[in-house]
Image (cartoon, rainbow, N blue to C red; front, side, top):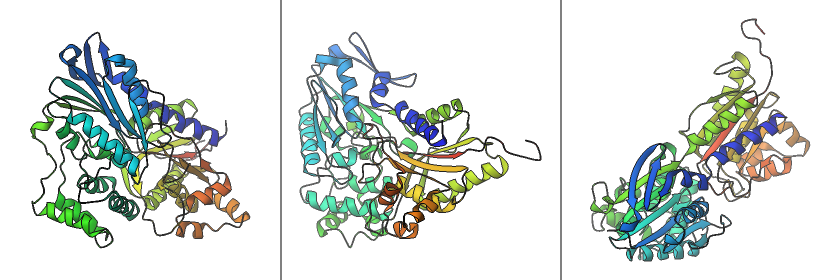
Length: 454
């Protein structure tokens, strides 16, 4: 196979390894009336279904539909009622659990409606009910439900400004938690005193449970004061509506109750489990690369920060492999994960994965033995139909032949249209999972002279 075909096989195997249906089936085990929740080989919770009058299923996120399908196969007609909120197009056929589709990453009225219905279900739960929660990346946008003093339009505006500011996901979610009636542990509050098993697929660096979908069933460690400070730090406070800042500052003054935090009784009957994450995807990518004859190296699953800087040092690692055989000799596959950020200054179309490839093209120009790519495991990079893009040593030369200026496209944050014209977009379609991004650098020469030895 060609290096590009190898690349496709590598990232495809990574996405398949974090399949949501498989993750739930491996974690939620039914043995007669006994229901076990596992994390790897560790049993986190054991429930006797005979102790419960009703089983209720709720959830939100890009991976939630196949997660719900797995729960239906495990529990069947033992489920009394269920609602999940998913991104438009990220659906599957379900028999019992209702699917609502909504917008991501900026929420819409459909997501608001889904969140309200989920709250209604949870508030009806009693101590004889079992709630199974299914949460994945994208859940923050798909469960908006702002407080009464803030309109959905005002929350949409705030979310959009945050996404373009370069703020890290944990900062964005700290604000979202304090502009919502469901995030930051507030679904646990709604479900009390029911028993809750909360299954999460992580799309955040370090798998911080309170950040995944803004932690609707997890204690909140952030505060109103912190949320207001984030908007001020990124110069957003003067751009959002007065209602948003008034709400946050009123909360910071202690005049609005904080979200429930660690030690609160609402979490006494909640068991949280991360059942799939970025490192699982990276390990699968490395195994496939090894099987294709590459020497693989996983740098980290915890990479965040500026996308342009990340592209620069990934290119330098590729050059180091070619020059010295470190950290592994070629043919090499360097792999990393996590989620970087882009400060958007132009009005083009793209996302952080395509931006990585665009920035990388400059650094590997003319280096025909290096190929770089970044792929969003959810199949969607920014507001586009692409998951990412691939670049190599010939990218800029091919662009110039078409009359394309990479400087102009970079300045306008228009990576999507740049790579579309080159035929270098990575299109996977909706994957129905989401564990952040996978970056791959292939260094392809079959022989390398190191210290005079071939």
